[in-house]
Length: 328
Ligand code: AHR
Image (cartoon, rainbow, N blue to C red; front, side, top):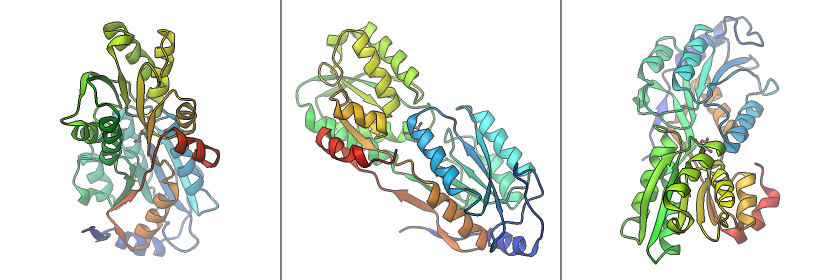
């Protein structure tokens, strides 16, 4: 059963309506005036960084949804994949007395203290994209993707596709992040009992450069003939792996097969070109849902504790059909 909450921040919405004042464009004013009809809502958004094509699409979706036209004053911070810097950004939003905070948490652990600080300051927190291990009493709502299911879908494709003994290497996402943890778990459970052997697994930090250099290391260690399959936790690392495989004189998608997650434009193009073999989508367009959650929470409406956005999966034919209409 889906949990529903009547947010403890309902009170904030009521109080906020009674407060007059205005928020400045840098969000540094005494905010706390949001959530009401026509008032500008100041929102601090702590983004992970700019590690991937997926992240760029997510940032754009958030900036569009939290626009001035939609009644928001967005204070944006990208933490360059540094968990300590991201927590510092959230503390700074609390000090600025923003009306609400949205976080795309880089890693799952380490959030308890700062989330308690936000709660004590009566500032509701909405998580988008990734999850945290802290108690769900400490945030109002989360909107994101089922990362475990994404990994599972990728693993099911691999299990069906590879029936002979297969040597696989894995390009992991950021260590400690929800998508890296959950995709690994979903994939591993799906390939259990199959002919696929995971011979190595290292983090490429969700970046193209990271994927390329880890793949170069794998190719040096095992040789082109020693690797049959790459599971990349995102498209950017798969694209980096493609560069490394081509530099080693082999054909990605043919000599070494690749399965990845995201379905961003460059990944889908590589799938159409036959350089990636299968992609499970991870939808980055979460802005509208996150903005609606912020408005509801500040207005004191009950909201779902968890909102999962559905993902599709693509083989080459499906990618060819979908690519012209993709929004990211
Ligand atoms: O949290 C979602 C993941 O983060 C995406 O799969 C990846 O590309 C991004 O960096």
